[in-house]
Image 1 (cartoon, helix red, strand yellow):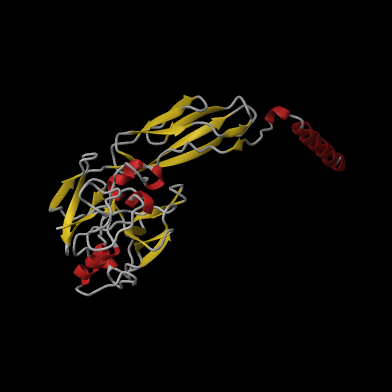
Image 2: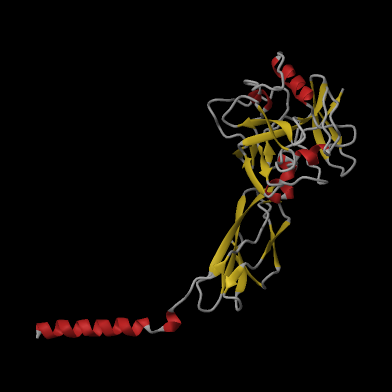
Length: 335
């Protein structure tokens, strides 16, 4: 009796498994394609950012899309190829919003975007910057810039944020209020090389201002250290005199390093604005690197720059392609 019971149970189980395998309505397949709503990763508090629906290629029809606001827990259904507008919270932080794709017979697919809110006014997202002593207004767009007298020149004490060219980090214009925009050398200078103290081209700078030359950078370094610094040098320990110990939404713009301190002795206020590659198609280095153009070209295809790194007290130089790489721009003028 016991032997028969075991056989019977085995047959019954097999029958159950075989029966289950033929229930096609319980099977699901995975979607093909890529959801990428291209939502901007930085935006001013209270403004709306858009994300585009779509991206699923299989199935080719019957796909429905919806968005989940992970902050307010709201769900919004929207058609394929349309823009979903999401309002950034008034508080500072990083917020998530998720796009979902659903279709009968398929597992749902999703993509979560993270948006960092920005308060562009002084003391908002950016804190730790010394109170500015002077400022100028760009007549082209009425944007204000803080300035500092350093050595024989007057320098912008923040990165240029003129929208006439260049790109915001990750193509998010609003991050320019904190970090400035990134420009190729050709965009920064208008394709014009310069040399001599205060003799750089205007380029993307406001009228009366210019992109700093190699000699302008040398004057800055001499003012900071009291010593001559030929441009083609590493400039040991100069970087820590130019960087500022500031925060962006509470996070250090220059991560902590035992190797360097952020003394900001001349209120240059250097920030880690990162860089762009491939004519602003890729971005990297924000909150760890700062790159600054010189208006002086090396040759017909390359131009000079200087850079800062959070784990390095120096201010080295380099040269790079004029048209594919994007760096920050500081503007200068003679006193």
